[in-house]
Image (cartoon, rainbow, N blue to C red):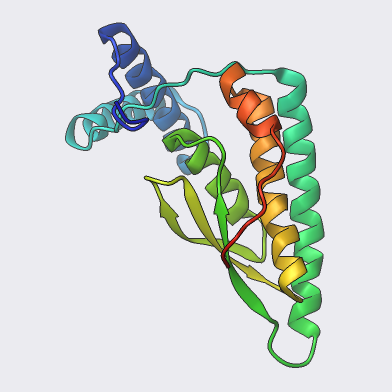
Length: 190
């Protein structure tokens, strides 16, 4: 069985759908700008309709939430946001076009959830954007601004792997922790 063929029990399916409905209801209320009973009820109806018409693929969470590591992840993430914002602003005022590159990053934890969370975190930081994700190999291709040379590309690749490690420390399983705590492999191809 590949990591993408997930067999969920009936209890796990029901739990994941309930969590999805709660998440969609929260988004619905945030879009309306206030939490009212009418927004909660209509949000639940819309969320249920969405899940019936567009069923989500099963995602099995086998990790464990570690609150201190979650705080550390978000603290570093917000620091990265601020630093990257100033770097992109500096690039905008620099004469000439900034150098950019597509950086290939093979993630160590190959799962839909890990790839999605890492890709979202990378894409939210200014100056980087996911251009492709290879689900079978667990590889992300990331467009990055302000690339100086081949050594800088390697540093950027390692930064993404460190982000993956911080994320797995925050919500990963013991097996995933073992994978991300192993030494970072050197990239052989560009």
